[in-house]
Image 1 (cartoon, rainbow over the protein chains, first blue to last red):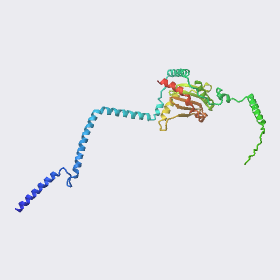
Image 2 (image 1 turned 180 degrees about the vertical axis):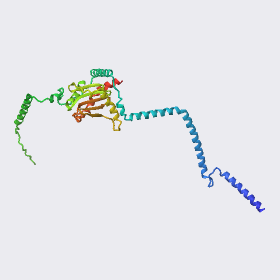
Image 3 (image 1 turned 90 degrees about the vertical axis):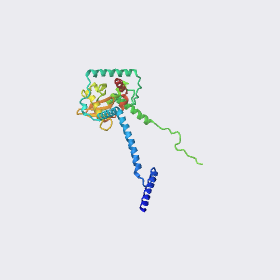
Image 4 (image 1 turned 45 degrees about the horizontal axis):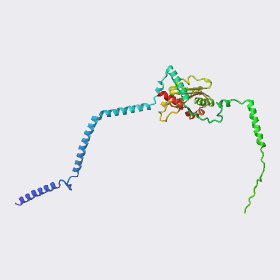
Length: 183
Length: 127
């Protein structure tokens, strides 16, 4: 009989424990696994990622031509930049040679345009800063050697100037030393 | 204005020792202004094909990560050629082998204010 009692008590304890566990199922206890909540969170995150991936795939499937175009333009831009940055020495041999007729036409056109521009558009004259601004091409005149006449004029002028300087005199009108009167 | 430009470049021709000829041309070497002492132009130095080579050379030499190329000086056995990059214009000075290049380059900065009208003409042509 004692044996039966102990068996019944054990069963009843088990049932009570089961009920307590059921009651505490929602709460976190010291025995509840710590990683359980983490797992749940991971699961929800995975679900979200999958859904996002699906959306991305959908987007990719719809926006594939534009992305391809973007890549094409980016690629062409890179090729263009590289092309402009390359030092192409061989280009010197294959430079553009104008035909004689085209060359003559262009010379005529430039002359016409320049003449037209100088006639029509009033251009403010650039100020000439030189000392001899009244003379056209003073460099040419100044490059010539002076003639004997010019030398004689210059010598005469210098002689007169020297004489005038020598003739300068100071007239003493007041006393040079002025006495100060202190009170 | 044309007289001003001509007078300025003639004064450079007279002042710089050894300088014989000045040319303002477009990038294809078609001249807009040609000036020289005694109206003599060295044939090879002023050839269209020779002048247009500069525009390619200056573009290629601007790619050396040293900034924009401003001028190229060519010293030959019997002549010196200085070319200035004043896009879309090229200024070419041709002289003897003893040309005073330093003196010539002091005028390089002053050249700009005389080139405005030539640049306008070229821009009209491009349009």
